[in-house]
Image (cartoon, rainbow, N blue to C red; front, side, top):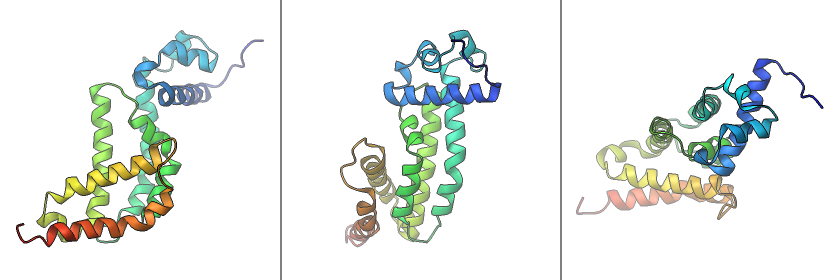
Length: 189
């Protein structure tokens, strides 16, 4: 049975969706244009008429998904206000595919983009948490950001989270504030 001819924007969306699923399942390096074409039910030359290579597909996916999450994250990160981790984990859960795509591999340029997003997201959260303490104790930033990265991985990115995200969120502010307070109150600082 012949395949239905789709308008260009719909075919492009179909290619991106199929590629995204494959990148998440097999990692960027494990996916070929042939695999994407087979998943979509089209030919490799047809894929190339929309994207010049698989990296261009990943770039387009990241552009789309980063644009979609940006306003949601910006609404949550308010300097000087306590972070609402329940809302954050809800937003990240809604954009879980982005987090998985951010860690699926790719070129050095793509890794730099992912690190820039990660740094901006974690840095914004750390600033919202930190008040003057992070400025006075710069060693706190990598500690807090490392903790946040680990918690996000454990509660949102993992296929089977080690604990329910909402349960972790209830305790995270107190945990971070306690750690920050412990570091800033040490006499040898």
